[in-house]
Image 1 (tube, rainbow, N blue to C red):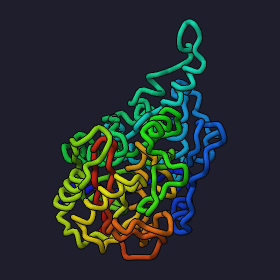
Image 2 (cartoon, rainbow, N blue to C red; image 1 turned 180 degrees about the vertical axis):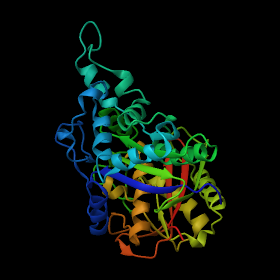
Image 3 (cartoon, rainbow, N blue to C red; image 1 turned 120 degrees about the horizontal axis):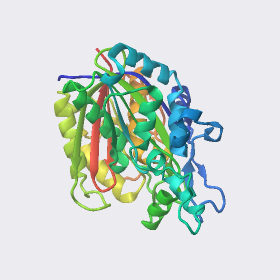
Length: 391
């Protein structure tokens, strides 16, 4: 095992609130942040995970061209748990040109484009619309790099629901290659109607809060979220033991029924970490709450780990945060490692008897030394992270 970066700082915002303490309290309480969409907001019934407080966030005047909900969410997260200060201190240690930014997003600031189309007139889109700074996929990373003062590599990864898990692998490779000394990784995806309508057209939106691993699960609940982590070559904090990626190459939207791609990612991650499956203490499942996805993931997980390892899907608390799901759920694993507990996953009382994974519904204290976070992107883009508590 070589090139093991350490997570020296991290922060996040979900429907549970902003900051590590909000996440910790909600995970222990089993408190879901999902709520019904306002009547008429989408034209159909659905539950959603909104990040509170975004209406009060304003970008500094110097970054006015970046104004959009996605970048406001990024700013709210950056200025929580002292993260921006920790990141700038790292720039001082390594040099601004030796720190990279690697972020994931699925839709970036597409809500800004929705609003621009609503204001269009006979001459086209309004003149104050800034596609490059708001909606274009690289907008998030450019904003974060500019705000923090990073001049090193700046990359955006957009592979649907695995986007902000794959950033860990990209950062690890850049650090191993000597292209940067430290990295800011993360992801942000904010509310937009386009995504909601898209999943609804595929009949994947549940009319109730999503119920991963539940006997009567019938779809996802979408949420918005953001998260950031600082990776350094040395320090105290959870270690990135391995990252492995795979592609199903099976179907444009449906997973391989046996979770073949997910299984490959998990097996490769364990091999890279030189870690036997029996030494993993917690698995954060992708766990969307759709019948096909949960069944395929269950087959893959139990094929690799058996049915003894404590698992949960935290999407019952946050909703499926799409391009931000990878970072959020990796940081839930960091909390589990730091605080010594297995996070419970909110679902219905009756779990699907056909699913074998040991799904934990109530958070409990445990000696969690190794944790796995599994992200299975729409269309079969998979990523498995192995995180560990330093010896």
